[in-house]
Length: 253
Image (cartoon, rainbow, N blue to C red):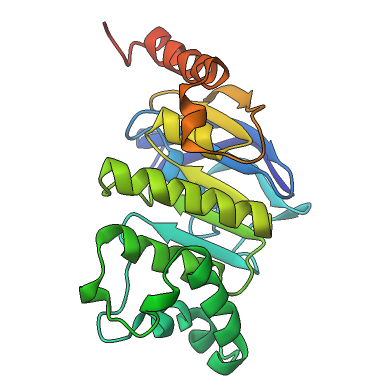
């Protein structure tokens, strides 16, 4: 589905800032890929290139064998800020992509309600964002990003501002949605635990300029439960990734 080969992204001239240097990564249809690494290592830049919002300076970045030269069709995106419209209720916010795309809100209302039910918000369809907690608002944003049945979902630290308990629950909700819909997800996070819990693969970036230092397949049961994080198998993955950060001098005892 996605093929990145020696991708370079540089801002400015030859003496400018190089955000990505020689990133090569293949992503198959239906995978859940998490990108982890220190701040400023190019994770979000790579996501913007995948979204067609920025063009690589060098290398190749393709979707289904064709260069990404603009936002792909059936693309969903979610960010740390939920960007809900305060004067629209929850259902209207979820239906925004259908409205903006000219697809007709009525056609997608049933799907919107189904998505809200899957994340436990079916009783809040007519509530306004000001009445929701941070976690509830992010659930609405996720439902909105899934409304048009995206083939590719790009998520840039969507849960970074949430408290730990809310973040745990929304991780479970997101994995349940991914299991049901099987869209391809590329997820940026600073949390090693979150990356292992959600993903089929975790890709580790070096400090800037970002390079891929490890691509780790996650072989855990398909149904992810929070208690799984206490198992030796889960701990082995988080320890392996943490060791990579230690080797790069990013974590010190």
